[in-house]
Structures are given as structure tokens and as C-alpha cells.
Length: 109
Image (cartoon, rainbow, N blue to C red; front, side, top):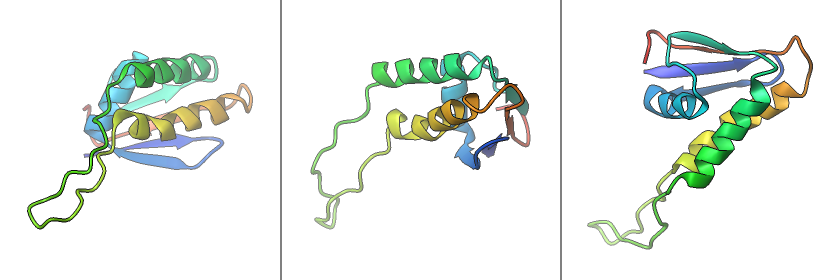
């Protein structure tokens, strides 16, 4: 299932529900089918995500080869998955009191 984050000031970000749930839980938000970040919440939410990234243990980048002898593709870690939402929160949070970010999913995740 996909979760769509839409900002009143920036573009939209789509992510899988598993990733969105991990990010929202790090912020302290519920994983409901619809939700919102208001301007006062955005700086604190971005900071909480940055702290979660700092504490995360992304897999090491290694030079392992697959069964065909080719290099395995790099693993996308929590840090890379969090960045689009951190950026959205920070940029939208700087634009004024009417700014908002909503998320939508087909159902709670």
C-alpha cells in the first residue's frame, strides 16, 4: 500500500506504508488513513526524524557479489527513506501559518 504526503508548499512524496509507518512512529504520530502536520508541529517533527536517523543503524555498504558475480545493489536505509519527509517538513514549516502537510492512504497502516 502507498501513502501519499502532500504539502501546501512543496510537491508530494509517495512511500510504502511500512516506511511511512516507521517515520510517523518516530515522530509520534498515529498511522491513520489520513493525518496532518500543522505549522507548529513541523519543526519538532523534523527534529525528531533527524534524531531517529542519527540513532538508526543503516546496513553497512559492502562489496558483496550476487550469485552471478555482479555487485549487489546498495541497500536503501532509514536515513535515505527519511530525507524526503524531513525536507518537506522543514521547507513547508518555514512558509507561514497557513502551510500544512497531509497524508493519505487507502486505510490505516
